[in-house]
Image 1: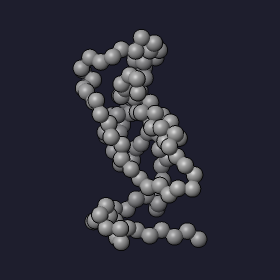
Image 2 (image 1 turned 180 degrees about the vertical axis):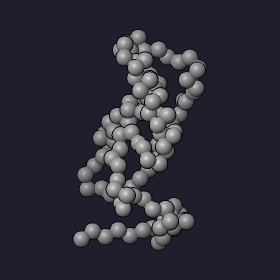
Image 3 (image 1 turned 120 degrees about the horizontal axis):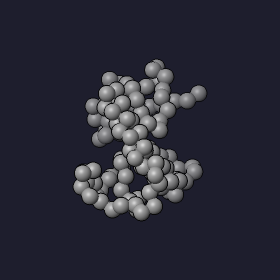
Image 4 (image 1 turned 90 degrees about the vertical axis):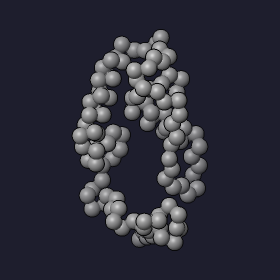
Length: 112
């Protein structure tokens, strides 16, 4: 991003654009992590966007509201994600304790 942001919507939008640039049909994909660098506290002065729209303070208030909701209800809320039916949610008790290092302990999923 040219200018730093704490706006989750902008971060997700940037990630989706990057993914569209590397996604290729027919390949098998799996989950991955994202590395963030150059982070600094909001109180530290940073580059200012000369073309920021006047809604910026309202957008910050919206993100603060999302942050408060996600902090209060961390397991039941999410921005930019689809909720799942309770019966289809991830169940950690079924996961191998060594799922990141033992391929033979990965869960097998079959579709019919």
